[in-house]
Every structure is written in C-alpha cells, then in structure tokens.
Amino acid sequence: MASTGDLGWLTQTLLGATLGSVEWVLWLLVGLSIASIAVMLERGAFYLLRKLHGTAELFSLLANAQWDKAQALLKGQKGLEASTLLVGLSLVKSNPKAAEENMSAALAKGKIGFERYLSFLGTLGSNAPFIGLFGTVLGIIKAFHELGKQNVQGADMQQTIMTGISEALVATAVGLAVAIPAVVAFNAFMRALKSRVGRAQALAHLLLGGMGQNATNADKAKTTEGKTA
Image 1 (tube, rainbow, N blue to C red):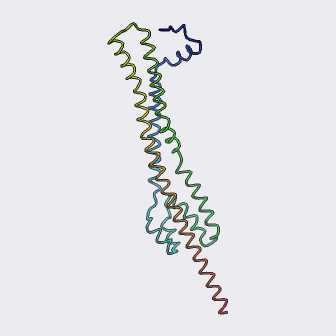
Image 2 (cartoon, rainbow, N blue to C red; image 1 turned 180 degrees about the horizontal axis):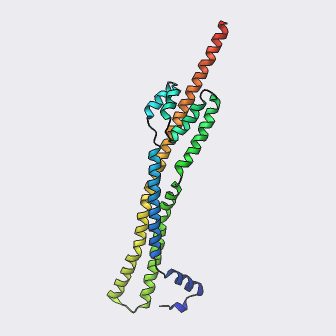
C-alpha cells in the first residue's frame, strides 16, 4: 500500500481536507430541513388564507353581468382570482377597454407573490441527495484511510469496512429524507398555483365577454334610437 508521502502535493492537500469529520454535512442537511419545513408552513398558510370563496356563485354572477354583486362577493378576499377580477370590475363602467390589460398586469403581479420561496423548495429537492452523497463519499474516504493506518486482517478488516461504510451512508439517507418532502411540497404548490391562474384567467375572460356583449347591446340601442329619431 502506498504511503501518504508517495502521493502528490495536490492529492495530499485534498486528502487532508476530506479527512475531517463529515458531521457538518449532517448538520447542514438538518438546517436545510428546518428551513424547508418553515417554508412549507408559511406557503401553506399563505395559500390557505388566499383561497377563493364562492367560486360557483361568482361564475354565475359574471355570466349574467351582475358586476356589482360580483364585486361585493370579492370584497375583502385576497386571492389571486379576487385581486385580478377586482381590477377589471373597477374599470367595467369607467374604462372597459383598459380592463383586459390591467387584469393581465394584476395577474402577473399576484403570481409573483404566490411563487415566492418555491424556488428554494425546488432547488433543495434537486440538490439535497447530492449533498448527502457528498457526505457519504467523505465518510468512505475517511473509513478507508483509517483502515489503511491499522494493521487489521480477516474478520476485523471486514467489520471495520462495514462499520465505516454504514456510518457514511447515513448522510445519503438524510439527504433523501430532506429532498422527498421538499419535492412533494414544491409540486403541490405549483399545481395549486397553476389551478388558481387558470381559474383567474377563465373568470377574467368571462368578465371581458360580458363587457363586450354589453357594449354590443349598447351600440344596437343607439342605432335603433337614431333610426327612430
């Protein structure tokens, strides 16, 4: 077996850097896990408090162009759909032509708030297993290095190797335990956001359709009055 002195300077330097305790990797994963749980709870409360109430009734009111009742139903609600529609309803009488652009802007702005911190969950879910694998590799390097310094054979060698590897694999297990909930939460929040965006767009189109229909009826009424006069 080659001694440490037979290794190149760079190899010796890197080996010395990797022979330290791998416990810091576990503490890093524990810290990331606590942060991810905090994000999940915060996002869960954020989404729950901004849930649209009276969805079926709102669709009915917009379909029948009962805008005042729809505005009253949405008053006090903070959801993505509510904030988007309230902008359009506030312009339905004063400036209907600007309603579409203003609702699109409100939807884009509101979406940013719902996407906050989700990138952290996505990144953590993708990279936590690699952090755990890094800790495992460091643990295996250390186990084999310690084995090389001891004069053990047979069953003692096998026990030493298995013990070192089993301890090192703990980091991989912890990395997976941190990543899986983060991925599940990220996918759940993204599905919820996609559903809300789709519902907001559907309601906005329904509102715009009612505006267009009212404008057409108004033009027909003016034409009839002009002919009568």
